[in-house]
Image (cartoon, rainbow, N blue to C red):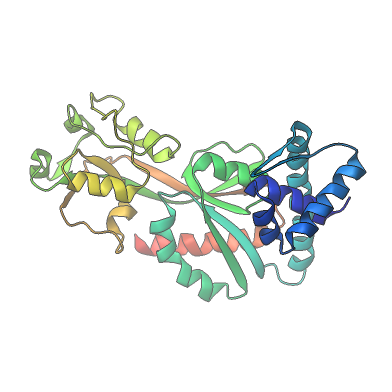
Length: 298
């Protein structure tokens, strides 16, 4: 048994297809299939159910994959540890951001990160909070940018910045006559929200927890941009993080944005990483750049 065989098995688990798994691991499909058969022979168990147009892992295969991911993650940590001994701010750093942060933060910080850390190659991913936490703990990513607080078992965290929530209204809405809005003003209005799994949905519901708001049963948005367009169409109102409103890549045509009266509800955005990570120096450097950019923004 070797690490390559485990990589083949994990790739098959991720793709559910021998051809795609072979492409991901840069080998031919016959080679990947043959190596997995050898792994099965070595372990003395069947790991993969091979059927026409249907590849599934056996129960023991699924258990092996869980441990294989852990082993592969540790092996990458060993490689990173060795490389970091010569230049801790070089090499690849895998960073994932949640969808309500990534599109608005990255355009602000990437140029500065590249200039400040020229030898660091950021591999960027986007996941909702729970999948991101799982991938972080499994060693598939090194750094996560999420809304805090979140579950931190085995993880460290660092606050990066705080951003206020705003109210997005269709032009001509009754609330647009107000200079600032209180949570109580939302009473009786239709509030459009993201689908389950987005922490911003829970945060918006918390802001409105003491207010009788209506949420349409037949609509859950998959992104802030979808929410924005639904508000423009007059289907309701929504809450948007401040940076999503300020983004130069998001059109505000047809929208009226109003701030909350102070103290405005807000969310804290932070970085999370494994306590055992060997990329602590690179993570700290990236967080330092984000902190510097966001401080200058204020």
